[in-house]
Image 1: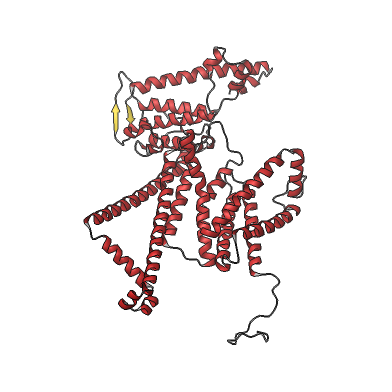
Image 2: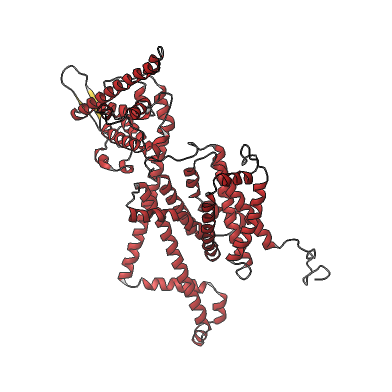
Length: 567
């Protein structure tokens, strides 16, 4: 070793190391973690927080991919299935969460390409961080590395790196008047000193949580850790359902079932691996006993690890020796086939359903809005430009983002039923009695007198129900027409009435007008009477708005401006 060669003649390096391999790994992990967190916060300038949360629910995938790509780790086949099921279930659970009434998500309304790229880089670096932590524990062992040591060293290095990043002016992160993030933060704390209480509480909670995080990472690995973190919100919501009677959408329940299917597969395979390990251990101990020595060749048993697997297979075959065991085995196989078939059908159904909705949103609705005149009029009434504007304005296409996921799906489903017929959009998304009314058959109803023959589509019944749902969702979000009856009765103050009638939401007007038009288009006696009532209400409201517009214009002294106010 002194002359720079090993005993086998291989040359070795005698130069002193400036940094130990373990410390270099800690620095790499801290750098990856610090950069990932900065990219996550930076992405919020371009995407909304729900979008970032939805992307974070897929964190299991980059962790698994980075373990395979960076460190060539191999996982059992069921691990990939578990990761896919849990990720799909969490995504369904987060994506189809019902919006809270009266609350609007802060941040950008749409997701830009820059924001999505930053979010993708954040996920990749998170996966690299967790996979490198796994590699440190597996390479250096528990005798050298402990959870507490990794937590202490990583946080110390991260603190140094973040202090450097906060002190250096960064173009994307600095704000006007404050060249560095540190100066921005200090200015904020000076302006709002009460924030220190929240900062200290956040730090203490994070420290306590990190103890559990690093212990889990050391004992069970990053995949188990990330599985716990991404399913935490799911179990929190389930607890809120039990304690506070909160409601989940049907697709959220599908997501819960998919997650539990993945967890069940994980638990079953872990139990099977534990039983196999016990049997191998028993075989090894029996091979050392005198009885085993006389019965078999001990050296052969030690040289053949397949013996354990053979004994397991023999025991499994022997366990099916009774008719009852065979019956249980058959039932379990049938249940497994049914479960995976149902999951496959559900996945295909959800993907097909969402693909149809995206086609309507980005292709069919814009094409209909661009057409001011209908080429055919088989229903006996002329289509107007407003009738094809489902967003409340002829210059807008698709659905209004303010309606949320459920509301936009309801409007698109109504569009499908009104234009393509019933049965196109599955009513299982929204419940109600719509399921019993679906069907593609059309019936003709001839009205009395000289009126034209109206063709009634069963899909109009579904369209009316979906639009009723969209109107309710819009009202829950504050998108509704003014209550002119209450205003006429004097139940609303003058200033409040002026504000309501001056700021009429065009989306609410479009939804009400569309609902009345669908009732008319349905053609039955009850639907026509309801359509007349709806049109009459809209006419009375329009007169009230017209009178208010004239009054406002006259009060403001706008002579020629009255025409503009009326328009």
